[in-house]
Length: 89
Image (spheres, helix red, strand yellow):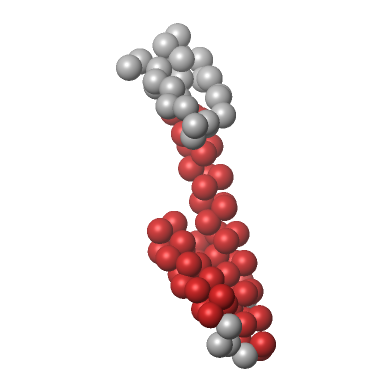
């Protein structure tokens, strides 16, 4: 189990998301046995965790990169509805 999670962490975010989408399609298809569906669900949960961890890590890196003009770090939440200009632009 730990080895499987480690392998997922070594894959890219995009690879993990593609695998997760495939698992969702299989589960929604309804053709899996209960045992196989449970196994795929577990794999999907592990992939989901790996993706969330990667997103969290990326968010932290972005927070460090966004600085005000005076050099102080300004942490602002990302709002997908608006498109604020980045500092220095």
